[in-house]
Length: 181
Image (cartoon, rainbow, N blue to C red; front, side, top):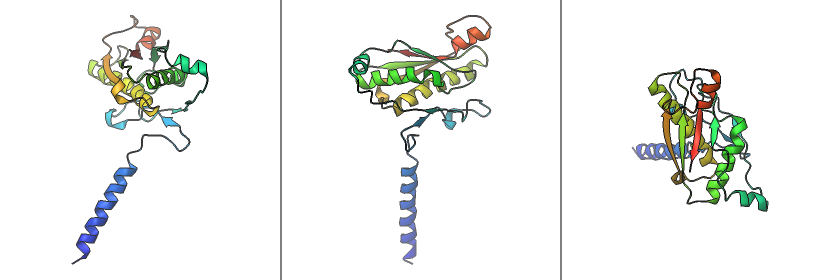
């Protein structure tokens, strides 16, 4: 019965190979990375599930002006989201990339990502959505090389609106993540 130790060894080896293959960070072979597609924290029926866009990698500016700009906190500190979504809009990718460059150039800098929602939905759902939005930004920054130790996430849900009112204009200003240094 020497077959049993051989089968056990093969099972262990196969498990190690599977685990190593599953430890991908979400990038593709040409250096692109993907947005928020974390199915583990998204509830059933969430319209943001699986709708992450593809983000281009824009590292290596090489210019002196670009390096000088990396020493200052980026001016755009708020990014906005579509209704009931946790994916970063393509129009805000450059702003998030600027924060990634700043944080990589300043390893002692700390940022708190504040996730917010509009008032539609239950309090519990909005707290979870605010967290998913902040975590989507955190994942994006992490893929761009920012250390997890430099970032923390806080969700305020609907509790701290930027604009009051029940219009689409007010709602759109409240669906956001704020970079707080």
